[in-house]
Length: 190
Image (cartoon, rainbow, N blue to C red):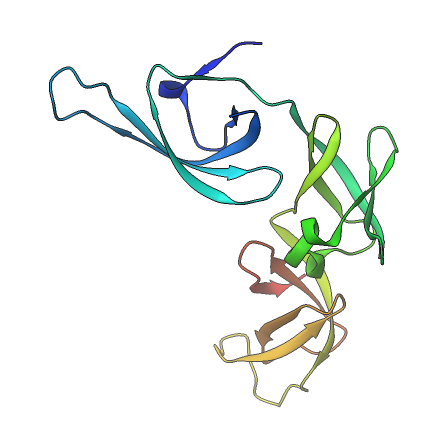
């Protein structure tokens, strides 16, 4: 397996530091101010298993292994007291992610939703949602005559998964809306 030099690091790369898998969140190169000093590589790394973010600095000569990670498409099946159950789209294997690993993403999961699952050494460890999902409005205040798409006023709404969002005044119960999974904002009707 080829080693990655610290001077080759880029955002979104996966590396092993002290035997643990990390994703590079941000990287900057600090030029030395003194003669003979080596360039430092400052990074922000996110631990793939715990999600913790930390800052580390490396010399440009340091090398890192690539962790055994892969992304696989999986469809959400159901959740219960054991956690969230998915099926690998390629192998049709079923697997479970504990509720702690799914955390706030649970509000976007609907039956059959296809997500990207990060596997480390063959085990599912993290979930990556599509950028947009379509959900049905389960509960919201009724619209009032005169509410238009041009209005910028928002009202609270509860979606089918229990997710609380703010929707435009003209959105009614039972309508499907498109939600950005990164910001949690409704982008319009589906």
